[in-house]
Length: 185
Image 1 (cartoon, rainbow, N blue to C red):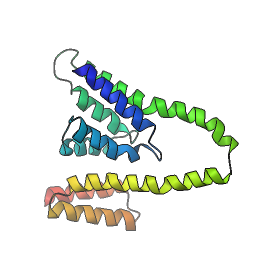
Image 2 (cartoon, rainbow, N blue to C red; image 1 turned 45 degrees about the vertical axis):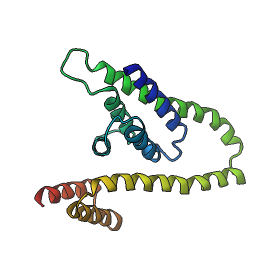
Image 3 (tube, helix red, strand yellow; image 1 turned 60 degrees about the horizontal axis):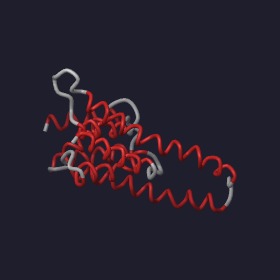
């Protein structure tokens, strides 16, 4: 039932909104787990495809939220007004992802300024850094595990990683070279 999907989207993304310390990318493992394993809105491959689109497209890195919502609510077909469930799902997910954290930020900011420079604030910030790094590594693992499914894609991934890590080559150029190598081989 489509209204149930809207409720699931609102519940999922409002919870994730409040746990996205370090930015939208840190909740990607949770989005993946919910979309693939919990609600079965898509397969691992479909999630990876949507993630790739969200990263390649211009705009915010949290574009994955809208794409997951559109997939969950149903991609539009060719009939008149068949796009409405996808639009409503997308708007539900966007509001759920950004409104709770924005309201919390406004509330907490008042108190955060009062404790500026205290040991408690510094400790809290330092504690969040390794958690955020671990969550980003988990996202990397999820994507790499699905994307590198053969020796050729594994080699392209390793070479791309090393080029990004050890050079100042624009990542877009590296992506283009990786795509060319994938097509060629």
